[in-house]
Length: 166
Image 1 (cartoon, rainbow, N blue to C red):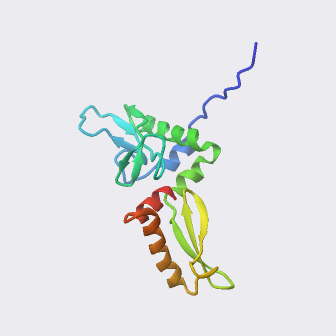
Image 2 (cartoon, helix red, strand yellow; image 1 turned 120 degrees about the horizontal axis):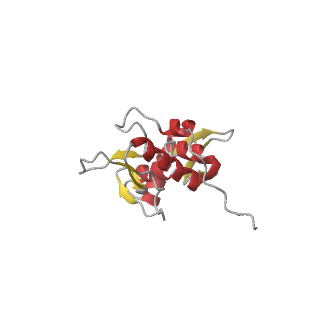
Image 3 (cartoon, rainbow, N blue to C red; image 1 turned 60 degrees about the horizontal axis):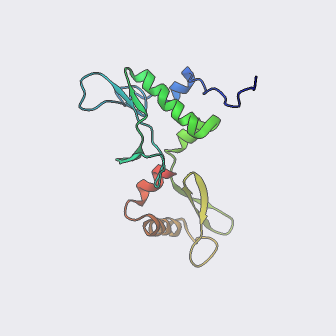
């Protein structure tokens, strides 16, 4: 008999579900929504499917693309599906990836020579240099450059796109 090379899917625990808990949604879990236009009491599992250019087939929503995993009879089962989706896409580091989705997409850092502009693009921190040197002369110069850089790279809704993809 040949041993299987496929590992079983990870088990969703109570501590996993606690990561999604919120008091701001009727379901009690982020990514779990009551099925609209349906009085059957069904719940949908709809996590963020990624940032701009996502290949997971999500539709563009208010805060970014979401993917419909499925419809469930209760919010807890839908939350389990959302956790499983995050585990499938990010493995053991799914909690860190989940929490990163709301991090500030840019900030300014003081260096011995001046100020650096750091931008998080798709989870990767990138130093954006000024057009005329290695560092910015002031915090305000770096912040102003971010606005121009983001508008040029991502268009009018740059802040929203960077927030989602960051």
